[in-house]
Length: 228
Length: 228
DNA sequence: CGTGTCGTTGAGCGCTTTCAACCCTGGTGG
DNA sequence: CCACCAGGGTTGAAAGCGCTCAACGACACG
Image (cartoon, rainbow over all chains, first blue to last red; front, side):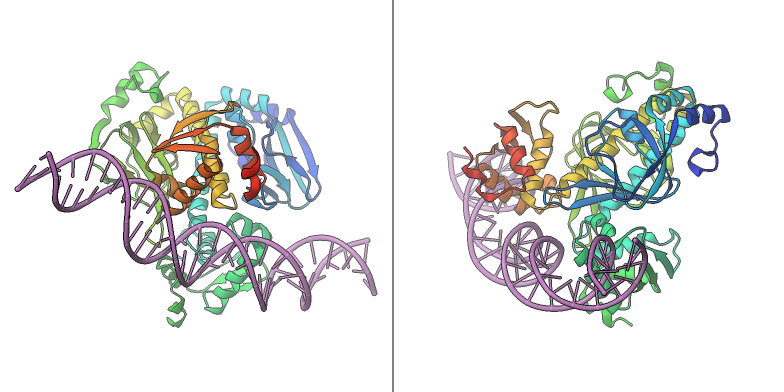
């Protein structure tokens, strides 16, 4: 457990107590860990695999909230507030997690103020990330949503060119952007056609970030492809 | 300051120190307090009036993140993380706020672990609220968005009937739901026509919450009006 | 070689937006 | 006292965009 980044800096005796209240769990692909509205009994930390948080919708589809990979955790806000889970948690692939008993976690939190500060940082960061997601989904057209999403996956500094891997299946990315898989695919081919991006499987490359951003912010005039 | 709910439970000497670093500010209608991307120099608490947090979009419109009233605060996540503000802050009406110097706030936070716990609760609650907003905006059709929104404004218990006041102008509510003012208006008249709600200005009344929720979740079949 | 999953492409429809005019109310000043 | 105006809200008609449904292609796996 000590090797995981999210436990870095904790006192070792506290880690020991937490580990005593932790279980190592294994989930096959598509297995549901938590249902929407369930009370959460433990804090989960992803060891391997990929976990999807999503809200099921009335038309059978779903809105993806987040896709978690190694070292990421889930459930802090619900445990802190003793509130039911606002999303459903499912394994995208065969995954391994550790589950830390919630009462124990709360007790250790109360015992160690430093840990509370860390959790506060974590939840704050997550809130800011969520607001950025809302901004992306609020873009008026789907091309803009996709372009914003790709741009924001790049490094925070102003590097002009970069290359990234989509953090999940295209279907799930689409659901995170509030789009259907088909629309996402179409928008990607559109961006490719205009020379904004190059795509190879889950691999996306951006050559001129500035051009992409400028075109994005100016409302995506279709004639912008002529700007060589 | 002691009278405001958000400072309840704090130690009085700490309150005194915070008050020393606080300014009382007055903002006319439409005045911008913080721009998107600005670094926040202080924590704001609303004393009176109404404050709108929104993200400006490329087509000239905006997405409303929250509408704050008396006693509500803003800026904690940004101050904790030292990150720029992800939204723009504007006064909807002539408003009064107090601004607490950020470094002082951080210093007092570090001094008092109990206060960190309170802020953690606050930020957690805000994250959960934001997720609920995402759920509402993710509804497939605009009628469902509006219906979800109204339903969620009611009391948390399962009261069958209730009456509420819209927490802002219809234009702003619409922007919070990711809709245009016109569409919001149309959906309200639609819900009125089906007998789900009664509207009088900003006043909305729901007689049979169960029927509304059932119809909402079943994908809003248009024939549902016949269910007397 | 069949099967299942993931992704792309095509055609048509329906919902939301857009742009426009109009209504209503409260405030203001002659 | 009333004309006038601005801001908020409603209503109408037309167009565009994303969704739906369907078929097809690529690839991994047993």
